[in-house]
Amino acid sequence: MAKKVTIKEDFLKGIWKENPILIALLGLCPTLAVTISVENGLAMGLAASFVLICSSTIISLLRNLIPKQVRIASFIVVIATFVTIADRYLAAFYPDISRNLGPFIPLIIVNCMILGRQEAFASKNGVGRSILDALGMGIGFTLVLIILSAIRELLGSGTILGIQVMWPSFTPWMVMILPPGAFLTLGLMIGASNWINDRRAK
Amino acid sequence: MELLVIFISAAIVNNFVLSQFLGICPFVGVSKRVDSAVSMGMAVTFVMTITAVVTWLIYHLLLVPYNLEILQYVSFILVIASLVQLVEMFIRKVSKPLYDALGIFLPLITTNCAILGLALIAVLREYSFMESLIYGIGAGAGFTLALVIMAGIREELELADVPRHFQGAGITMIIAGSLALAFMGFAGLI
Image (tube, rainbow over all chains, first blue to last red; front, side, top):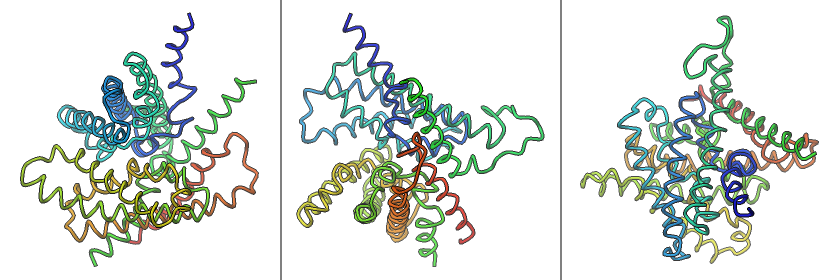
């Protein structure tokens, strides 16, 4: 029984309790930069999750072969390989999204969330648990990106996924799709998540 | 003249942290005190300048002639990781207190997206050698500027009465938002 709980915990902790963005504050750069529209946020979330899951699998398989001194460099090379794959794939099949995300696709390499999970989890645990952990973290990351980009797209251009949802006379809040809007929305979201955690703890 | 425009654009108008969202992690993590913010900014500027030069050389003298552009990401990140290692050894030799103050954030410069971002953007914009160099220095100056301003505000903030749930990261993000608004005012400069 006890084992079953840990497995569930491995998966679920990334979604809320140790959410990479809201609680651990990792991987903030792509979070803030690409969430102008839901489409971009979703694409970034999926690309980063793909890289995270693949690298976690490989790293946990190799965890006994990598010397401790050069582990960071080895992790980064593995991650960079998968990012190159994701980048080529997006460029070939979704050229528009690839153009919108620009340098932020290659920048997944230095997303501290991914490196952090390799260092904290995949290099210490077996393959099964590492994949579950990566899956949970990936979902947690993608969900926050979707919520953040939905708020910004709704208020900043009055649309969701390019479909007009606000009433016709709605004046878009330009600031929401400009850089300051990203910082403000994420700040409010972090505050809100702290508040919800507090309420639940009571 | 062209070079001056690149410098001002990288440092102020398109500030790396506040308008391009590069290097947010150290911006949130190391901005608690002004003095450590200054030394962090210096270290990052140093790595950025050398990275800009070295990655330009690698890209134009090695990768392009041999059609190896696909190795761009892997080779760039390896250059950055070794440079950071070098800077780390240098700082530990020269100033032990500074080394202790920067702590875990020193090796983490490797994963500072501002540095890889700089190398990638310089390639994307097809900058010449001189332009890349100036771009590196400007980006470093902009990063330091944003970090120091933020650290100054946060030192004052310790005395302020922030709502409990916004303490720490929440209020930092909101201040960064206001700073970004202020920096947008420079948009007409170039």
